[in-house]
Image 1 (cartoon, helix red, strand yellow):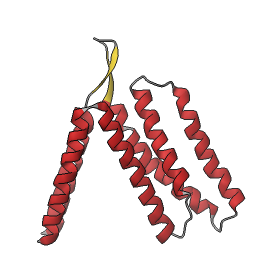
Image 2 (tube, helix red, strand yellow):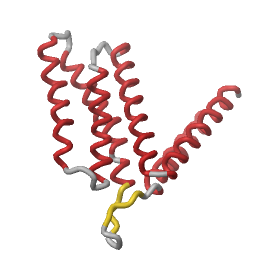
Image 3 (cartoon, rainbow, N blue to C red):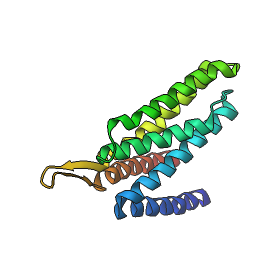
Length: 169
């Protein structure tokens, strides 16, 4: 029962921060999810390095993920051109080439986990910007629609809560 209470209180705090940042402004939405991207990729890289026998470059991997998130935010809100994605691609190329010269025991495993974090975490969180920033033909500008990313999280929370309650019983 104590586990349920702890999870509930932590979840309520997380929900309050997420809803508050998402609803209040586009800037707070971008900042919150950029921080979430950084922390999530860093944690994934740490866990992989400790338990999977890999040696992923956590710093470059995290910086690349956050940069991808900011690129999607800027591009989706019409603030930056598509050329802004080039440094991200160069950072991925750096991750590939550096593994060859560092002569680590299993560079293929390091590549796999580095790219897994970019696809599984960074890309998915970055695509929230595509949902949030939509072109409005009436005003001929891009607007921030907080309802779309929030709807995704409500569906995820409902699914997760249902799965927890079914597994708990």
